[in-house]
Amino acid sequence: MAEDIQDFFEDKVQWVEPGQDPIPVQPPRPPRSRREMRRRRQRRLRRRRVTAVVIVLALVVVTICALFVTRSLKGASSRMTATKEIALDYPGPGEKPIQFTVESGQGAEQIGMNLLHADIVRSSEAFVQAVTNEQAEGKLFPGTFDLKTKMKASDVMAVLTDRSKARGMLQVRSGDRAEDVMARAQQLSGLPEEDFDAIVGNKGQGILPVEAQGNFEGWLEPGEYDVKSLGSAQKILSTLVGKRIQKLDNLGVPKGSERQDILVKASITEAEVNKPQYYGKVARVIDNRLSRNMPLGMDSTVAYSNKVSALELTNQMLQDPDDTYNTRVHRGLPPGPIGSAGDNAISAALTPDNGDWLYFVTVNLDTGETRFSNNEDQFNADVKLYKQWESEHNQ
Image (cartoon, rainbow, N blue to C red):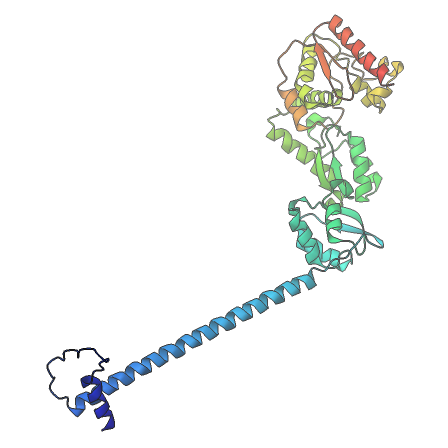
């Protein structure tokens, strides 16, 4: 009954401020029944309940979000702490000398674990981070390196990305002689020297193509080779020759005796000058002299047969008629290549520059400046320039 009266007054009573005219009242409504008033109360109760539920749900959502943010911050803090703990690093520079081997195909993570096990770094993560910071993933070379225990990870990374520090990896450079390459391969692989000698004595049977005429010179492809993993002298030499044949095929070098001639010309071209920009002209000089049946007159071929540098040649060597590689005495190409020519020299021998040059002289050994001519007078003048440079530099 009290609620009925309250509802009645809420509908009928108006508050009027002092001095304010009463608000016109609408015509009186028909009296409500108790049933209608009860329904109205129920609607109000439902609205209050819905409002309460919405408020409670909002509080729950806010609480959940707060918990999530708090846990995320704690997780991030934990990860940062864990990273600092995991990526601990030695201050360096290191203690006991140790040899460490990187195998072909190993990545930074595997190398890092091996370094950790050898106590070279304090954590593998520190090494991986050092590699990542320097973007050096693709610069880690296989081979055996001289390191120390307890080194700083960045110092280890610097060594493992330095090709010159890798032992056990055979580097064949353009112009290298087969004899020298085999000696390094034997030392790095630890295989008996007799194994290589036997293959050479057997003229590379089963390894060299027919046009090589049993001579490995010129048929060992420049590059890097993990000779330890290859495991045998047969496999090492087969790999180097196989790579050479593949490269010649890719460069479009004709097969057969012409391929051998190209290798001879390319090896001489590379040995005569130290700047690739001159390769095309030197190759043209060789062809021009051959076409005129002139001796090539290349000091590099004589130096090769005598196993000396061009600066160490003597008059006796240069005049020796028994030396089949003496192109000052004998016409035509020498019996074989005088080194492993690189791509640029091979391409130059395939397609020489156009010109009528017959002579050339390197007039400055420091800069490599080389002058070309088609007559003896100019050639002699260029020789004088070289002699002048030689006297000024006490050569």
